[in-house]
Image: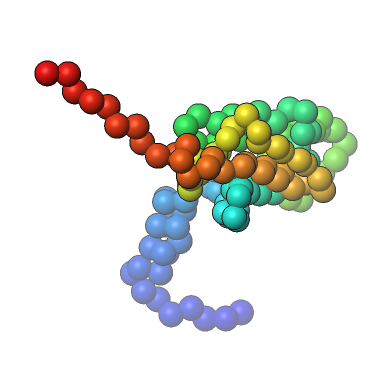
Amino acid sequence: MSLTKYGPFVNLDRFLDDAFLTPSRRYGWDMAVDVFEAKDQVTVKMSLPGINPDELNLSIEEDLLSISGERQEEHEVNDKEYYSKEIRRGSFSRVVELPTAVDAAKAEASYSDGLLCIALPKLPTQARKGVKISVNK
């Protein structure tokens, strides 16, 4: 048995970590996303093991990519004795802000070995420029 030095704030760090975790992390969903930009496209990768890709919902509105889906609940059998049950089931949702304007109509998504990969072609520079509006006098 090891001794722990007493201090009035020993559990404060743990409390603060638990209190300020995002809900998805607090309840066991790992919603980490990699977003990177190459010459002509933005790529988004998300680890989603155990998800049926047919039940994933992906949508793009302006500069936001929405990813949602559901991991099906496993039917529990009464004669099992669980020692640990940490794999989360149920629905999830994540919204990712895209770093630049993309052509949503040409977006492609693939799912392999539990990894969702979304390729989003960037819009040409001139398509992203603003439009000058004249004011009538």
